[in-house]
Length: 544
Image (cartoon, rainbow, N blue to C red; front, side, top):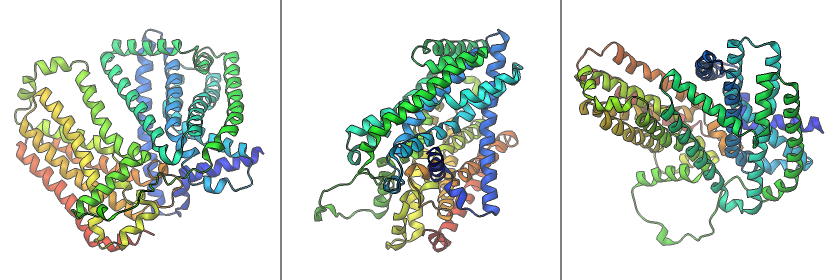
């Protein structure tokens, strides 16, 4: 029985995460993909380690470093809770593997246990950056004993159990009473709103309270007080914190015991209610019984119709909206709010004339704004998944009487618009508040618009070369798509010219710097366009 559950868990993890890598043969492409993964995770590791080092060093000054343990445990519980709330609907209900699993000779509880194990594995990926690395840094700085690291591993393994089970249970109960084929997008929309509100609240809270080293200390102690106030509601938080802070065997034993009991209870309860909600579900989404009438066929712009189709696909499917659209909308808002309430901004605004004196011609303003915009666009994954999102329906592109390259250009328009407009609003607010040179701001936005066009063309080319059509859930198209790392690397590479113009060319006139950036980005964007137009037949062959 246990062997069957573990085997099925491994298969589900592979189909949800590693299927694309497993299909690649050993060669340059696979090696390059692995290098990209190493680079991306190395960067996240550095960020996590650097923040942990600074926070722990600050707390050690006043001998309050144990507060960091409670902070880490609280973050991991909250992270597991929200991540499971968002992903559980895809893994449990809207995955194509249900069509294959239900007829197979598996016991119901074996399928349930395997699905829940898959959700636990998902939480472990984020736990590496929110838990493992911070605690390793903590152990190094505090010269912790070997026993601390043993306790650390056990705590990190079991601490996601209760939050994962709670989020999963909520999803199962909701699905039990709601017709999934009509309302399946509702639940992920709720998750989107919760994550959005939580993220913005944390951002506002942190910017209202951080500034100097003393301010950081106050914030961390407040978080520790928050964690302690939640002890009665989250017993695992209390026992996990005490096990690591005091090396308490009793607290560790209670933590493991509660987690084990919750696992058994969760399997038993979900075995009774899960299949009542999953039977009859479909991963293809909602459908309409409305008859198509003659009046539904109207003449209109072909380009507008195609672009509207792309927008509808992004908005109607919660996974694509969450992973592709939302970051481009919410991150500029968070950054704007963070800037508006950051420490020292009021003084900077009151004496904004100093910016004009320091940057008379606007060269530095121009380069900094371009850098910020390029960095902010790193989280928009629309073009890089434009063809893959169509799934098996992508063959539609090869048979309609519309040149293939035009279709690719139309697929890039949502990416260009969402990337540019959101950053335009952010930069308008910042520029108006700081009274930045108008000409420098306008020229920076022109360069960013051209960059957004080139980046979108690059993304759709990569997606055409390595489309992902045979996915088991829509979540896979974004979360386990190696092509996204090409997109991230592209942004990092394109940061270099702007950084050089800031460091080396800042003494040149603004228009000269603008023309240099214009020639570079325009040439790159036009080169990608020519490639799409001249190689469209070759790119089309990659689609089935």
